[in-house]
Length: 404
Image (cartoon, rainbow, N blue to C red; front, side, top):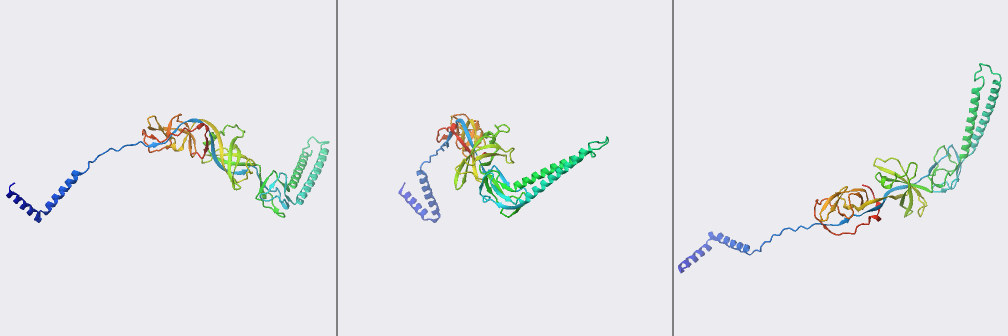
């Protein structure tokens, strides 16, 4: 470039820079140069695909075996023999035993309360008089009948022969004898004795009190024979084998009862001996367990609340799996050799808070997910988090908390 041209270029540049009309242009040019430099020196962007990792789950290996179920229930102890104490006839109380009080223990045949015997003795004397009069009347009628039948006419009626009179006299004697027996029984019952050994409660009588016939004076319950009424779902009856006994035969299902009594947790042994017929509206049946009151460290008493463990029958070919493995009511996730999962429908006979007892649908050695996640997809691949040893199903005793 010639010197003149360079001078012209410098003059043009000075004029362009100093001219306010061109100020925005050169600012824009500088910014473009800066941006171009930043873009040219920026690091290269590397795009990588997302790596998919199979989820991890714990598994349970299926093993079939025999189990003996223990099914839970609860109930309140009550005396099998309970009797309301009352007099059959009215009278005045003249004697009350010191043992006739709430909570007192009495023995069979022990005298509890006496009524004034005078009215009853008077009644006995009156009935004896009535019986003597009835017998005298009978003898008179028999004598008249004997005379009337000596030479009876051909047309003599039964009345003329004293037939109805004789029947009436005999019936009068029968009535007098029955009335005398009742009066003597009332006299004997004017003294109340304990019909069996037991404990008293709800006693309400004092000496000098006038009582009416049938008025409750107290309650006596047996001290040696207690029972518990246990509700169980209808589905449990087959598990408890309560249908094995024939008509008239008592059941013999062992049951262990536990409850808090006297400030301590205690245990008693009992036997389910019978079942109430039918089922309730909520599909429950009632079993009656008889308890030996002395089977525990202290005698069992009424109204003690008890938890019952009822021994069921032994079941074979049962797979015991974790309850958490259930997807829905009757499905589990089965793991195949390729580590993919598939749904499997199973049939279970019982489940408690921890385990489900499966009778059909699983084979020994199969693996199922311990956590039945319902959001998994059929055929998904998983990783095994751990492989715990198989449960020894043959030694499992199930403690049942309820049937769903």
